[in-house]
Image 1: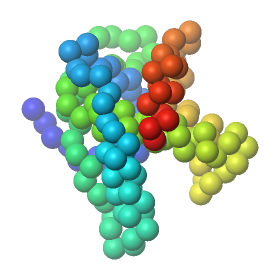
Image 2: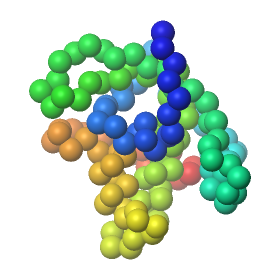
Image 3: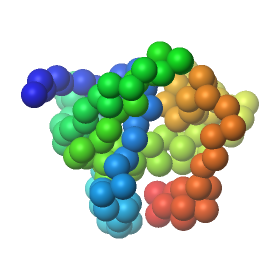
Image 4: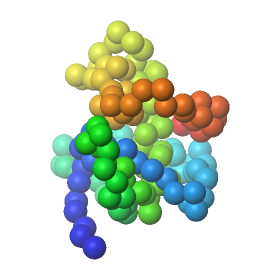
Length: 138
């Protein structure tokens, strides 16, 4: 096993697709847990003396499947709650920004394209009901 340190947004921005195995528990973070992560992000962002903040590990394995798009699916073994919450926070931020608004170099479209969507796939269905239900907590 190889451990590598990475900044969250850099990790999410790479061309990859996360796969949550069926045996993983469903998303269960409470509003309090989400708020704690958000407060940690805000606190780290406001302080110039903090260059990084450890939010926990994400353990994954490459499935070893050849993909026409060149994107290797990553099977998430541990950290799916943190990973899912980070993705939900990015989606909530993109909705808050609106389509034309740009904040500090980011727009809603950039956030979605860089971190949330797989540009190499089309026709994928997303469980919007489940996603929106969890997004309300954020």
